[in-house]
Structures are given as structure tokens and as C-alpha cells.
Image (cartoon, rainbow, N blue to C red; front, side, top):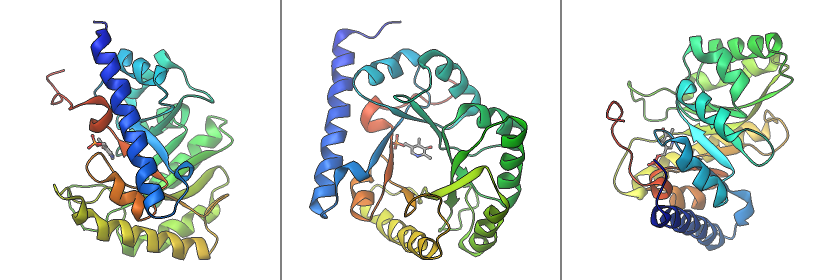
Length: 244
Ligand SMILES: *Cc1c(COP(=O)(O)O)cnc(C)c1O
């Protein structure tokens, strides 16, 4: 079903509005807006909608399921102007395909997963793969992410990796309507990033901070986010899975 002209224009308008808000919040705290990468979180939305976003200027897409992303990547392509980030939990049995498909994986939460991805990069002849460690600072049982206690061992395990490039940290704080509820989590993630950067663990840079979603990305930028993962504010609300 092709989008109507009106829907296309509203997608463009929403994308521009998000970009404007990113710029404004960066400037508010004296940051250069170009330090912030917008990841358009396109999960659940069909490829033709992603194409509209691509035409409107979106160049980095975030997906949380390998299988769903695969078909879209095939359709939209992957290259300089179209990057794909895996932002959801990665199951071991999907790891090989993730290595083939994604430019960056945000959800490394165990030494086992890091080790597996490193081996798969060798097998798949992938020279390098950018990854982020997902941290769970709230101790939420249902969420993936490494605890702060496990972080040192996980970071140390990257010492043995030739192909995985640890680029930074990611967080998905407990959801609260009020963006201010996320602020302490963003702040703590930044402190952890700074500590790790002081030990020079990040490959080629000061360490990315992947934090902030539709309801709290401005707060995240104020706290130092370098990647914001925005879905609803660009694409509108998602239909519940299963009803698609
Ligand atoms: C879905 C999702 C987002 C985007 O959420 P919105 O509220 O739609 O902006 C960001 N990060 C992760 C990990 C997600 O799964």
C-alpha cells in the first residue's frame, strides 16, 4: 500500500522537527549538534515507509529484530548513506546474521556474546564490527544489559578481540512519562563512559553514548548523548506486534 502524499509530507515534517529539536537541545548546553547522530528507529514499520524517511534525509536506521531488519536491508540497501544499527537484544542463534547485516550493534551485554561475535567476524571475514555495551543500571530483570558490576570484566574481554571495536555505551532506562526520570541514568552512563575513556578502552574516539528515545532524547543530549534512538516521534505510533 503506497503512502498518500499527505502521509509522506507529515513524515518529512516530523523528521525535520526532531532534527530541529536535536539542534536546539545541543546548542542549549553548548554542544555542536553534529556530535549527535539521529538513529531513526524503524522497527515494525514496512520498507516503503523507511524509503520515505530515506528520501527525507534519514541515513541511519535502528531495528531491534534481525529477521525483520534483513528484508528491509535487502530492499533499501546498505552503504555510505544508509546505515543499520541493531538496538535490540541479540540472541545467540541470530548472531551470525547480525554480523552479516549490521553496521553497529548496541546490545552487547555479556562476554559470551562478545566472544561469539568476534569468532563470527573471523568466520564471515568481516574485518571490523562496531559495538556498544548495553548497561542496565536499574537492575531490571526483564531487560537485557550488563550490570555495572559486570562491566569491568566485559570491557576487559574486548582486550582479546581483534575485530570487534568497542565504541561506547548504550542504555534503555526504565520507562517514565517524565523525561526527567531518565536524567540520572543518562548522567551515570556518561560518568561510566568518561571513566572508561580515561583508560583508553574505546576504539577511535571518546566513547559514544547511545541514549534517549522519543520522550527523552532532549534530556539525553543535555547529558551528552552522541546517538539518540528515535522511533515514534518520526514514524508515529507502532501497532502492537502480532497485529501487523
Ligand atoms: C523502540 C526502541 C526505541 C525507540 O523508541 P520510541 O519511543 O519509539 O522513540 C529506542 N531504543 C530501543 C532499544 C528501542 O527498542
